[in-house]
Image 1 (spheres, chains in turn blue, red):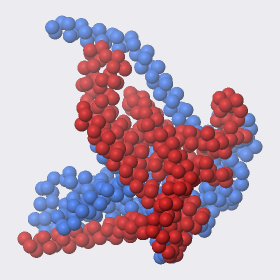
Image 2: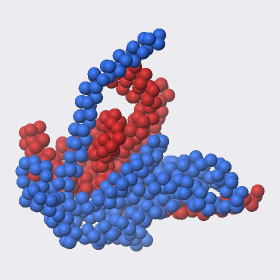
Image 3: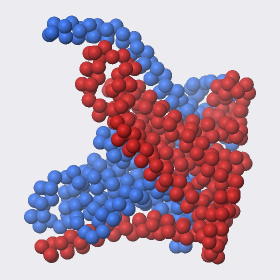
Image 4: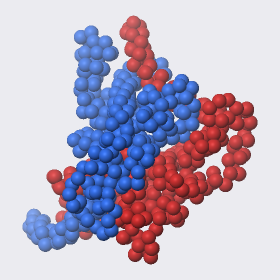
Length: 290
Length: 293
């Protein structure tokens, strides 16, 4: 019995070694697919370093003749890009801070406290998950126009603050904190606010960072609402600005794409620096423990 | 005891107050207002007379509305199942790799996901540019000539779907990778010991165990893609939009270009109902499949 198992194991071992040709082929296929998938980004970034006449030359030139930064310089000097950057930064940071703070408070209350209406609140949060916010654009516009906040930062920020998922993630995380922590702190005379800000949140900094990064990326990238809320060019966010005001660039492809690269830089960096956190936030928001 | 409960209520009230304020003002209130508005003949800003179900009658007879419904459904069909299948394929490929190779390859597949939609638009407008686009070298042999993709109706939706899959797939890939990691290694080792082929291992072990994640991806994608607007709007810009109209775009057009707030709200209610019904049906269907096992 032991004998046959042993011989089978060595047999499999041999077979695996010999047949790893299939594995190598799969790896090559994987790299090939990744290269194709990534190609549009690569090609667009390379175009930004080309001179305009070089960019439209027929044929496939994988690298520019010289890495020139003229398109970037042109965009920064001749468009409202710097001010769009300021607008995007203000609105995205504000959305991130408010969403995370409000969700942490609400998630904590729903998870740790007993109060009338708690279950109702929780069901509303869960149900709102499937409601399409884009169906509300008309009424968001009416409301924001009504309080005279169109073309302002506050007007851009307000409708972007709805984020039931963040509450759900916090609630589930706080649910997992052992009861003893809470009881020990309560005996020591801590109130609920101290409990939340001194114990529960510091215990979950990882989750807060992950949620903050993903909220920031989402806010920076959001298009539909900032596009509706702002007509004044000087109040636009980068994401809206780069297409809404093509005149600033003219039909110069290298310049247009340089604008695109500048617009994606903060989110691309956020992802590359915090790859693990982004992954964590995404799997958590979908309800999977990674 | 009573005192501590009362202080509990107080703390809870303070903690949930900001959330309720924002949720009430930016979510519950506009939702109620939307339904109300759909029964009036209002402009975008300002009051209008109450006209009962007239908007709804008009909507059911509106050919452009049905075009938008059809195009939205077509787009969902082209993205949800194919996109999820592609994501599973990529996740299976990436999960075989280890260490920095895996991080690098995963980053190459994932990076499009974090780009703003306007950047995605600029990238693909450049790739598919009629005169200078590098993708035309692929299209020319296939179609026999260069194709102005965004001005050719039969090409529009499939191409929009293709680049939407390219753009949004990172999300599903991460979910699949997490799911694959949760499958116990011993199962694979046992199967290899028994001499199972790659296909047998996939169909007997991976597929049934990854099914819950697949169902989750399908649900999330379905709800997401029903709300399609950005890409279709950006690529159709400057051309005639009616043939490729989708639902959110129709809401936008009625409200912000035709100044018909009441009618736009009616279409928004329709979208609302479609999304809720789709997610409930989807949930029931997936649950039935799970119970059937």
